[in-house]
Length: 156
Image (cartoon, rainbow, N blue to C red; front, top):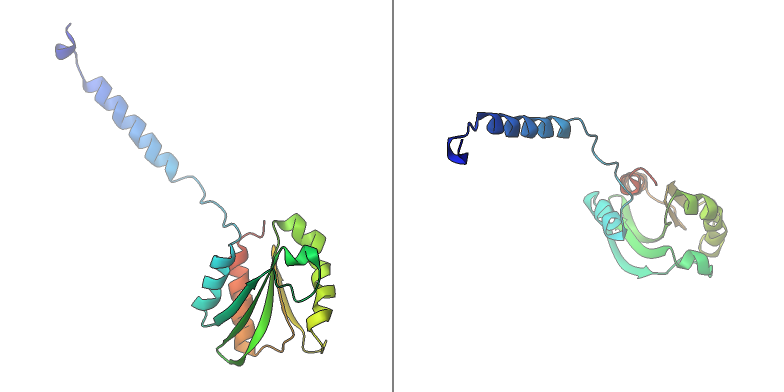
């Protein structure tokens, strides 16, 4: 038989079956777990909740800890019921292991900028910690918590 006269039904059927198995297989895979956001993602999550940020400074840890300076971003935030801007310090750790290892150093650093321990505000969602001299207004606090939780993804 010449190639032109060969039956093509078997080839066509095979191609269709391969395509169908491929489509069915796609439906059974789980979506990838969300990974932690970078600073742009954090800023977008804060803004989407009605917060305004300005005076962003990379390396501003609020204290003189050289390790934290590598992870920190300082910014002024206001919005919702927080009329007066407050300086937030966001510590972005590489992964959960770094977060676990360095988390307590943030509290020590906070002593530099939180002159009133009763007003100190912080929130953590691995691999992030955010701290401020505070106090935070209730809606502002809820927005910061929600944004940082979303930005953290699975926290790895």
